[in-house]
Length: 115
Image (cartoon, rainbow, N blue to C red):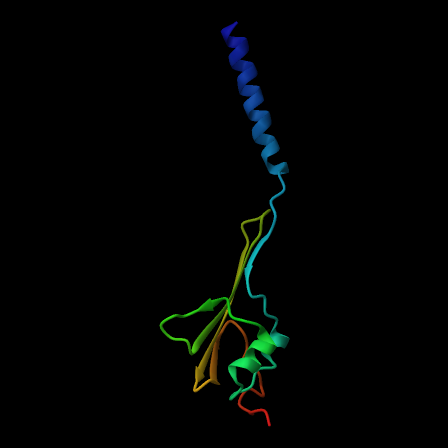
């Protein structure tokens, strides 16, 4: 009797373990999604207002340095262990864009100010 209960319990546990891969897990995106074509519209000497118009508001505001803006995007895939991270850091001086760095290519016309 005990052997039968133990055998049934083991079979139930194994069958439940086999079903765990059937559970759908959603993708979890967080932050500002930016495409390279959006970043290509940036130019040196753009005002903060112009940058917000092009890229939107940054996700992270540095309270100790308001002239540094962080655009961060993370995607955690639910059905796999794949993670995707992108970052763009913009530096301003006197409310004008002076530099950019991060995971995006610098636009060819970045050093050409808008007229």
